[in-house]
Structures are given as structure tokens and as C-alpha cells.
Length: 451
Image 1 (cartoon, one colour):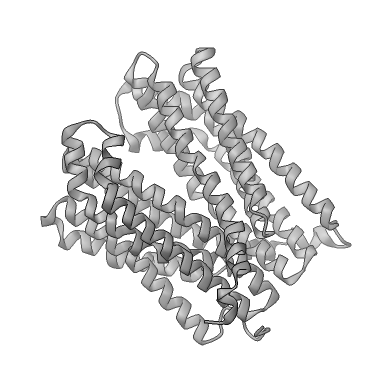
Image 2 (tube, rainbow, N blue to C red):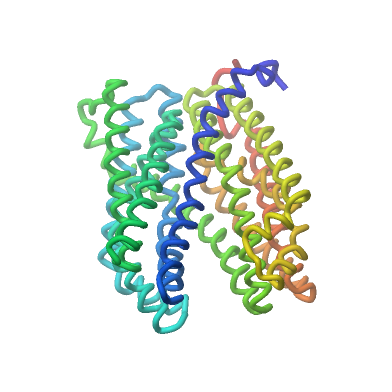
């Protein structure tokens, strides 16, 4: 390990990027909790069921389009590292054009999208009715929500984690305030919860646009001669779409495994389904803790690739893998020592609590199995290596997750969690192998500075 690894300033750099993203991520479960509390105070359970189903559908649509944030971060970080202001501005414009095109497509196709989604989701007639009420309002936030993904990714690629933190905290904070006002104050019920999210998304877009504009003014980024003709060429968009296609396939596989956990858990009984839901919340918190360092490594390695600095690249990888492993160990200790107590805070139903405690050991092991794939994902996003991410995810999903589950079905829910653990471990191992192979062949950075 180079001497600079032990430099406090290097570790401070990691935390300056990672910590704001971890803090902003905390607002996500807080928003979900407030949504549940506010709608839960209405007099019928189907209101809560409608919001839950509707929010799940919207989240799935926007989550699958998360490649807008990932690709923008990697490309912007590389342009920033190269000191190429022209290309950095092009990344922003192309990302916004793609986001607006996808948003328009969603709005034009909203009826068939909603019909298919609710056919797949199921639920009672009243849950479906109020779920449709929610989605029919919330889907109009698509232009703002997708724009925010690009703005967030571009600001992070500029090594600025404070601006994305402000963007996320404002969006979720405003959402919480308007949620309470629209639902409990004005009595708008389910549509009020959706309207609060739409308004919050557009207000966040205004803030994000101002933050980007301030960055452009501060650094003197203005379109040069021939900018627009270069920026909007078909070839440039083909390359961008190819990268986003690969990240989309990766996201689809990941979502498929989580959905399979839910559907297969439902077949094992209501108590098992509820216990898995509790434990999946813990898995979400693991991702919040590790995502901050994944974001940090995206920005840091992207900058190193742009600067063609192999030493900075390897240092960024080593620092974030180190801190990712430490955070994972912290989660292991928390779940091992206080897991049953944490489960008791989430549910007071004895049968569900007992089932969750029974399967808790899998969550104790999960952070150590999963931490590597989070950080390595960030490395491949920062280097815009979408093909390797796609291939390793397909291999982990089709070659590990489903075969392990198939051959361990006799273990019941233990077999399901074994498959998830092996899946997370396989993602880390396969990405690690791809990383080693590229590093051995100098595939990440060809030539460039060693110091």
C-alpha cells in the first residue's frame, strides 16, 4: 500500500464525499415512515394499501431509470479529472435531453404502464382504486424526478457531495411537510400524498438547476463554438444509450432478485413474508451505509481516469474498499448484538418477531458478503465500464442466485436467504475478478501518470 494511503487528508477526502450522501440517504426511510404514519391515520386500511402499491410502482419505474444518475456521475467525473470543461457541459446536456425524452415517453405511455403494473401487483378492488389515484397524480413528477437524477449525478461527478445532499434533503423534507398538510390538513387523502411528492420533486429541480447554474458560473463553463453540433450528434447518444442499456439490465436483474424474495416468501406463509419484510428493511439500511462510499468511489475513480492517474485510481479504490469493509463490520456487530431488539422496535407481533429472529443470522453475515459489490459497483460506474457490470450481474443472478435457491428449496426460507447471501458474495467476487483482469491488463487507465 502506498504511503499516501495512511495520509489523514486522503481519508478526509473520502468522508467529504461519502458522509453527505449517507446523511441524505437517511431522509429516504424517514419519508416512507411519515407516509405510512400520515396515511395510516385515515380511517380505512385500503388507503394505506393503495399508497403502498402505488408508491412501489412509481419507485420501480424511477429506480430502473437510475442509470441516468450513475452514467452521468461517471462521465462527469472523468471529464472533471481531464479538466475538459467542454465535455463536462456536454455530459450535462446529453443527460438532460435523455431524461426529458424518457419522461415524455412515460407520460405518453402512462395508461398501458399503469394497467400492466396493477395487473401484476394485484390487491383488492379498493386498494387498486386508491393505488391508481396515487399513480395517476405521482407519475406527473417524471420530468422533475428524472431531471434530478441527472443534476445529482453531474454535481457528484464534479466532486461536490454537499449540493446533492441539499438536493435530497430539501426534496424529502418538503415532501414530508406537504404530506402532512395535504393529507391531514386539507383532507386530500391518497391524492394528497402523491401531490406532495410531485411538488417536492419540482422544487428540488429548481434548487438543483440553481446549484448547477452556480457551478457553471463559478467555473466559467460556457458553450464554445460548435458545442451544440458536437453535443447532440447521433454517435454521442448511441454511446450514452449503450452505457445506460448495460446499467439498466444490471438494475433489472437486481430488482428481480428482490422481487423474487418477496413473492417466494409469500408462498411460505404470511409470517415468513412479514419477517422477510422486516429483515429486508435492515438490508436497506446496509445499502444506505455503503452507498455513500460507493458514490465517493464513483467520483474519485472517475476523476483519476479522466486525469489518467493510475496511482490516484488505485488509492481511491483501496481507501473506499477499506472503509466499506469497516462499515460492514460495524453493521455485523450491531445486528449480532442488538438484532432482536431492533426487530422488536419494528414489529410487536410475536409470530413475526420470532420468525425474523430465526432468520436474523443471515443478516449478520450479509454486510460482509455485500460490502465488496457496493464499492466495486462504484468503481465500474466511475470508469463507465457498463459491459462488465452487466455481465457480472447476469452471471450472479442466473448462475448463482436462482440455482442456489433451486437446489436449496428444501431448506424453505433459509434456502431463500442462502441464495441472497451467495448472490451478494458472487457479485463481489465476479466484479473483483473483472477488476483484477482489467488492472492486470491496464484496461482501466492505459498509460498515464504513476504519481
